Length: 253
Image 1 (cartoon, rainbow, N blue to C red):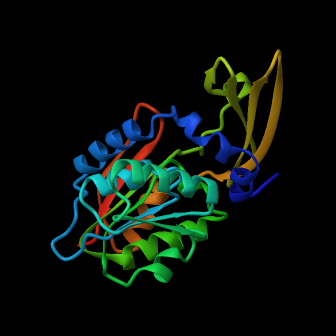
Image 2: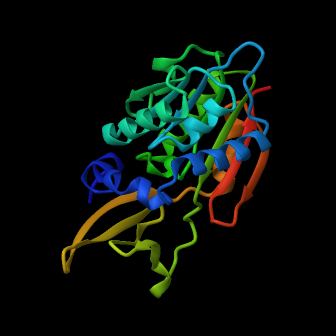
């Protein structure tokens, strides 16, 4: 079993943009609409935003399109940050976007000043990639400390506390004529879901299989809401969307 960063380096980074559907500009446009609907906008005193777990940049590009700058795109994956840099250049956001290759834990106090950030986002199930609940609580405290008054925090994550059973544990992700991705879930303990990603790629007349596994935290929505409030933020929006991702938005008073 790999850690989440090792899993991305070993397998997922090379397929991640394809897994999302391959159209980063379209995905960024949809994310900009979502964020704007949640009240995310540059503040009068700060246009700085931070995207924790930026990946290939769908949220980073959305924040730049909404007028934020600089947008700090934090991720552990060099290849995904390279993709993001290329996409930002194509979209005309080179000046607005700054990539930071770093562990999410501690990134906010290291790269921002307290009370200086207009928006912090941690989306796409990134929150569950952290090693422990204590790390999640610490990250939320760091986000609250970094936000300026009126600044927004947006999280999206999957509540994996209800275990799937039998064949429900086999989840098709995406398939195209030359690539198929499926994941399989196990539950070794109450805190963890073990995710096995299986990717088949066509090579000539045959297929090649790649497999890697990593743990995700099983975070209950209510628990995350409690940690957000304990950090000093007000929850303004909390609902699960049609894709099974829970969307939580909060503001610093």
